[in-house]
Length: 346
Image 1 (cartoon, helix red, strand yellow):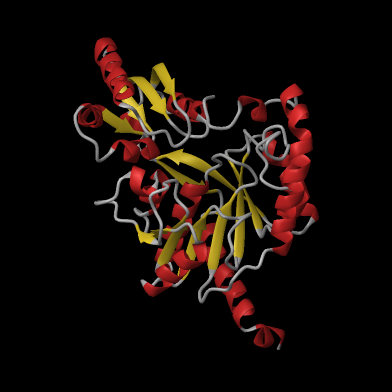
Image 2 (cartoon, rainbow, N blue to C red):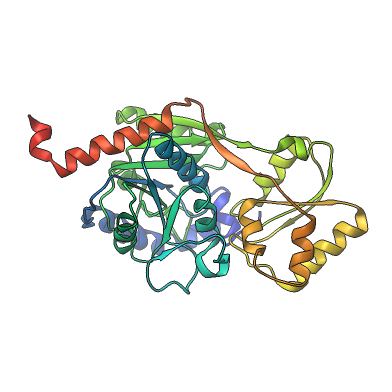
């Protein structure tokens, strides 16, 4: 796996993690205290936060998109809120997928914008106000579970059932963002994705605390386009190996793979190498939707790559099809309790 996170985070605890453990104790103490003492400003609509326990991907973005679709189907206007991954954004910005590039607003916000009104903001409170001013009546926040300073009415934490939380240690010894005991206190429900035993400890802990556990699968949308095809697959996501396996699972013949770091912006020589290798060996170039948006808006050799490129589109499919709608309903119920606490007691 190639990622911005160190490989030892995703293996059994070794000497690197042990060496950094004193720093992790300090980091964890500060992160836990910040979660306990956080002053979360109320906003005038329900807020759903889709987060995870660790650094790296677990399926937050497709989950947020699924919830946005559910909110839209129920007659609401969802607003999607992201911090983005670009240092160029200094104030809340409404994402325009026809104008912005990934280097401007980040790759995930461009995907979220397909599902509804999306704002990128370093200050999530200001971002929430912008969404409400634009007519949003429910906010779905991609990430920010540990750090957001706005009131959350429903915190859905996503866990990859196969990858889990790595070595289970707090940054920098491992990928965990804050002590798990403190994080679980703030969770409304757990979403276990892709099956696998790695989510089992959290399912048991949630059961003991009386909190619901939902299950879902990341499902390909266009699998038939790839079945039987010889492909060169490349990806710059948190876990490229998961993408490569997904291609094999839908019947693609994965002849060659090229993993890149998460949120990677491709250099011209990297793009040229991908195109030349695919042409030489007669392979179909396949990547993720996130990588596709990072390649858009460039010229020259990038255009040649985009012309040859196929994307494996995915969606988050809940085992209970009614679950996304029920999450939206519960967020509204929790919002009403937050806004009118005295009426809730009657």
